[in-house]
Amino acid sequence: MDGLHKIFRLVKAIILLNSAAIFDKIFSDDFILDIIGVLEYDPEDRNVQNHSAFLKEHAVFKEAIPIRNASVVSKIHQTYRICYIKDVILPKGLDEATLASLNAIINANNAFVVCLLKDDTSFMQRLFATMRSSNISAESKRELVLFLREFCTVSSSLQPAQRMQLSRDLASRGVFDIISDVLRSQEKVLVSAGTDILHYLTQDPNLLRSYIANHEESSREGISLLGLLIEGIATDFGGEMLCQFLEILKVLLDGCTADTVTQCRDFIELFYEKCFDKLINIIESSRVEEYSAKLEILYNICELLCFCARHHPYKIKITFFGSNSMEKILTLTRRRERSLVVAAVRIMRTIIGACRNDELLISHVIEFNTLKPIIEVFVENGNRYNMLHSTVLELLDFIRKENLKSLVVYVVESFWDQLLMFEQLTSIQAFKLKYQEYVDIAEETQTTSVDHTRKADERGLDKEEEDYFSKDRS
Image 1 (cartoon, rainbow, N blue to C red):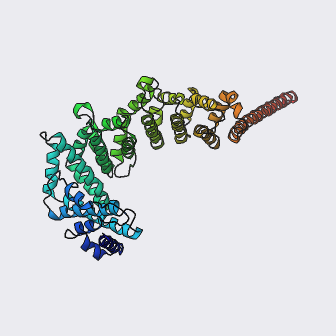
Image 2 (cartoon, rainbow, N blue to C red):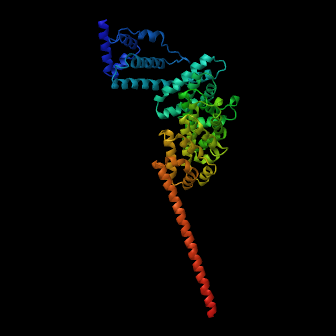
Image 3 (spheres, rainbow, N blue to C red):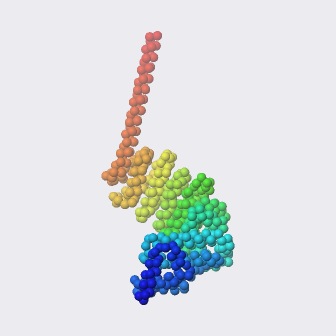
């Protein structure tokens, strides 16, 4: 056994030489399994690890679609085995330079595999034809979807232009139709794979925007891909998947360029027409406990609404203040979960920030007493210095610093009795001082106006007297 331990140390030392020429040799098909076999005899581990047996018997490469190019298959095997050495056999035994070299080999192999497969017309045709087939079994379809996700994942090692071209190639082969079917699945693993693929394809978001716009009315079962994305953000799939749905929608709703402005605006119009009210209704229904959406779902919806207010201020009047949408959003201030209350306040803060120069919208906020639930929950929170406390104070500070006079006057004259308990806070003191400035200026202006009127009247009287005496003299 001592001899085997010495060989282990020797092979490990060879790997740590970090030589590209040595790596080419020891990671070749002829030697790599022997190298892994030697690395089973770690002197720091009392038990011999059967790495070779595991790789030969259990880690079998399953081809969802047969790959006829032997070079591609060889690179796939090599990549998996190098990853196994790096992550399983020697996770703590490699220095940073050697790790960087191994990662470079893995990335180069991934790029090699993806480039050959994406340019293999026969392979791509067989892949998509099989995925679209009505005769495919559920298990086979599952394997193909997971393969496509892995294919997209390893494609991240390509250059940006190559990734963009791959997205276009996949779109032209009908990948969005396939993903639409996948997102209708009841199997969480498949839906997760579908969102991963879709997220990869948003490297060129206009592809997905165009697809959604062209297929909105003709979607099977009446649920379009856009509708499925909205369902996704409103379904309890778990944190990571909810974030994926959220990120996809954000990418689609943002990123307009000079070349894509028309398609981008068309998609935004479609989103507000078809989806905005659905999101608001989910929030509204959460007031009824038995129909209440999960906390994470509501939080992500608030995050998306905040994003919309920030990026589409021209839509705020129609959407957030149409159909009492803002009032429904602010019902979240009655929730016990402080994170949701803060999320609702941030939406209001974002709206005021985006439309601070819009007098009509500011008037709407005042007329409908929109800040009332925010002030009430702030007062209810008392002197607890938490995120809610900070968020409301930041909102008031913003209103003051931006000199939004009508809002300052509205807040003080409507809620000062409630805010009096916070008078010791610097922010509240500054807010009241700003209000007093406006009052003083208004009084001074009024006084000046009265003086001007009096002087004008006096000048008018002097003129009348002069005219009168002039008549007498004549």
